[in-house]
Image 1 (cartoon, rainbow, N blue to C red):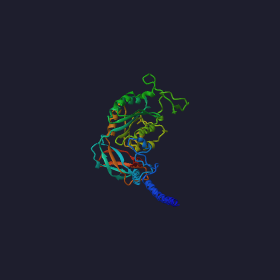
Image 2 (image 1 turned 120 degrees about the vertical axis):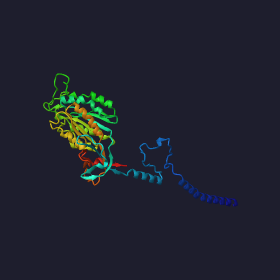
Image 3 (image 1 turned 30 degrees about the horizontal axis):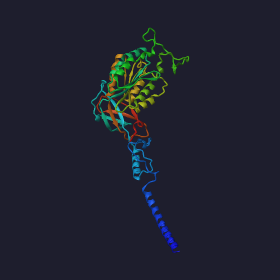
Image 4 (image 1 turned 90 degrees about the horizontal axis):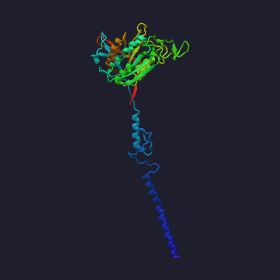
Amino acid sequence: MKRNFQLIRLASFLGILLALSVPARAQAQQQGGQQQSPPSLKPPATSPTTPSQTPQNQQPGQRSQNPSSTASQRGKSADNDTRAYIRTRTDIVIVPVTVKNHDGQLVGDLRRDEFRVLQDGIEQKIIRFSSDPFPLSAVVVIDNNLSQKQSAQVQKSLIAIAAGFGPADEVALVTYDQFPKTVSDFSFNNDHLFTTLKRLDLGSHFPGAGFDGGPLTAGPTANGHSLENGAPTPLGAKLPPQSKCLDDAVYAAAEMLKGRGRDRRKTVFLISDGNNARHNEHTFNQTIQLLLTGDVSVYSISVGHALLQHATARLEKYAADTGGDSFFAGNAADLERLYSKVTEQARNQYILAFTPEEADRTKDYHTIEVRVRRPDLDVSAREGYYSSAIFQPKQ
């Protein structure tokens, strides 16, 4: 009996010890759980030599989606994102200006305080000024549907075009009749330009050139088919002057130039008789808007019977609206002389810049007028700009 009583006391003592140890173990496990995250939430070990541990679609500066990021890291990442969406507006209008005396010679000694710029009739503050020569980005656009005589004169003068450009200039070459054709893309290689111009055959519309026969002629056409009988136009046949798409050719040149840098003078050198089809894919106004948006100036050289046919108006309008200039060449010698004159003039423009003040932001197009305080000078500058082209976000 006594032995049984001792066994009962021992069992009771062990039960009390077991009861006391269970809460202690539970508390220890709970404390251990606070110190160590479950495996599924623990971030993977990172190593700078293991690129596979960085998500491939995560861009620099992008917030991590890892749930174990600390509050401070999330706050810092949020600050970075906020800064990434801060934007300021830069609205600087660049205005190239040409100034000549009464003899048509360039005037290059004007000072900044001698210029005045007016936008919509309101004078603006000139914030930047330069009289330094600029490298050129140029597209030479040549009418490839001239009369046989004028085509021969232009052909004879072509290689002189290359002499007007230097090693810092990039030049592309385009010909047009019904459609513009890129003969040569932009290149700084003047030897390449010279070779391309030398090999260019503007007589391709005249299959009888060099033979006794006269040029082939074709009636009115549409999409390469005669409007008289529907038959295809003979290969090499000369198209009627009114079928040439002048606006489309200038538009194509503006498209090529609009992406070139603002540190270059972007110019179109247009050699044409001024004839233009009634229906171009792009209108004159659309072409002017693209030219102004891309800061492109047009320098036109009228050839052939443009003056007699009163076909120079469009060429002169392109030049005046964009701050370029227009010329007339009566023969090959005039053309050769004008090529160098045009490139010199384009390269040596004054550059004025202003930030529009008191501008009506409900209007997209704004007029520009440039004046000089020195008397008896002829000033040429673009006649306006589109605000949608200059108000660009800057981070």
